[in-house]
Length: 384
Image 1: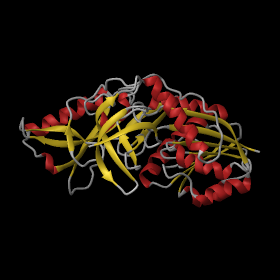
Image 2 (image 1 turned 60 degrees about the vertical axis):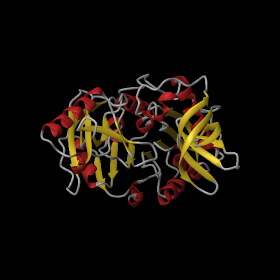
Image 3 (image 1 turned 30 degrees about the vertical axis):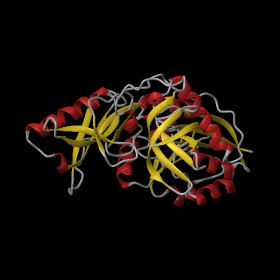
Image 4 (image 1 turned 180 degrees about the horizontal axis):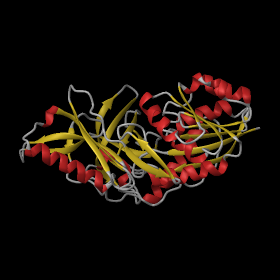
């Protein structure tokens, strides 16, 4: 057990403190200013990582968590919600500041729904010797150890109810937990659930597609594929993006199943690019009945589709954009780049490489992932 005074929160979500030997400690489940005892989960020469065990001196911003399993699913459940929003806004500003981009980010937008918002959840299965049955479980933070759960509040209740029913069926059939890798469940905004069990050593079964409506348009998607997990907040950002698009030509890169481009620019000269074959299959279906062009390719392989009169929409994976794409955008100076990101660190890095030719017109973080350290950030760039 180690003791540390927590100085601040870092983008990964942990609190950082300094140990008696000068090493830095990155600790889960803590707030700035707190004096805490923590269990070390990873030891390095210059730093260590850990999970809180005891709060010696608590922050006035600390609240009681709603779930016992909060460290596994949503470690910021112990934050006062207004404080969470403040800290996330500060972290966005810090990410950009590290790239020497001075911003004054507005307070993170939220709909106030800080629990029961996730439309997708993956559970582990655990054999509980005390009751002689399989139970739902999560992995303990920074550990391979499984923690059985009695309740969980971050996902929509339809998901948890469906998962509990599936586990009850397994117990009725006297199945063994070790035969299964995970239980995946997802629901749409109407509360319809698609769920499945992943058996160890076997291919993942095909799941029933779900349907959802965004800005009045219908989309189908695989529960096991990429689709936003907080749709009310996603609609909020789609409205913001739609209000920004002014050109007749729009290129949607990293398009997924097409929800951004088809929601904000289906009435324009729209091209959507996606590399994942499964997502592209759904993209083609979602684009039927429109004049949109769809391309199965890496976004960095379609640079010829970027023209000097095109609005470019970027929603890349956490790793950010390929350098060849950034180079092309700098060469052409398109009128507008709309960059949505789930990782402000790589987003700020990419924008730093664009700022010689583009300036930030709008920046707005969104709390897509309440009670967790994750942040969604929208930046609108215009050519200088």
